[in-house]
Length: 282
Ligand code: NDP
Image 1 (cartoon, rainbow, N blue to C red):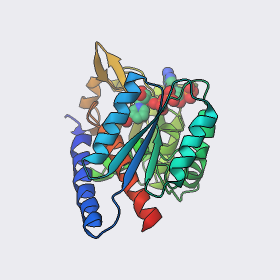
Image 2 (image 1 turned 120 degrees about the vertical axis):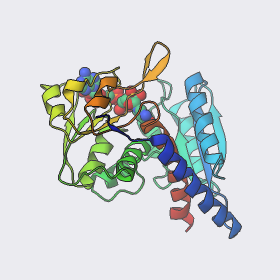
Image 3 (image 1 turned 90 degrees about the horizontal axis):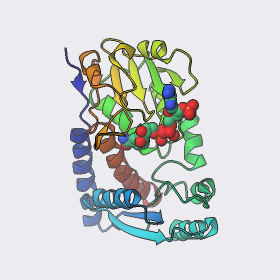
Image 4 (image 1 turned 45 degrees about the vertical axis):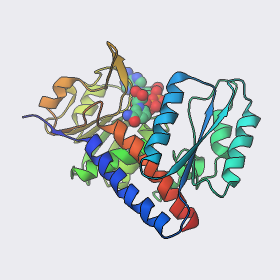
């Protein structure tokens, strides 16, 4: 039996369609068009490409976007000043700072300078704190996208055993908190977890956010489990995940990679921008 494919491209497409209709209705009613501002420090080609893609995704649903660049040599104070100006700009609904920042910039200070209501990546300590209290405001895009995808395919979560491999602030920790909020019983694993394979094999829902090619083998997966492959790795010039292709024969549900979590993450950024506008200006 082959796993049911958790098709992120398809679900993301329906999110874009719904958002396009909602933006069009708002604008037709005379409300301002939502606006996503992207801050980019330096000219790293991958970061430039990510920002371009994020702006294009926003624009396809009718959300305006703008680019705010600083040179590679910018100081923390300069980045914080740019962020503060965008916080104060009434026309900006959502604000993202493309990571990673150059080494001399204090990334924590920059994230803390974001207005929590405009923080569309959900990284500000206020948003992280709300999430850990079980009253999320802005949810980080990848974790929120994963929960939406699981929900769309009606993967049972309540009372199930969820295992998350990875404990980063951007994926592992917040997806664990969202699974907990969905009443799963959650175990968070990391590089020091003992007998990781045995822990993974207990999972009804297994999320891998490690970043190691084909790390999760078929003998790590409980038959029938839902497996979410967040990893983005390169193999022979192609993007591959953390989950070995043979897992498709063992799992009950599986995200393709690419085409699973990635498109959901991108769509959620656009949705967070729309929601930020509505939250701030009604
Ligand atoms: P980080 O590098 O911040 O975190 C990786 C986590 O994996 C850490 O908690 C680390 O443990 C854990 N880990 C590392 N090696 C092992 C191991 N051998 N066994 C068990 N755990 C291990 O990465 P991110 O969370 O930012 O991203 C994870 C992956 O997901 C990356 O490939 C990234 O590119 C991808 N990603 C994909 C997105 C998408 O939209 N598809 C979005 C964001 C990320 P420890 O804490 O102990 O070091």
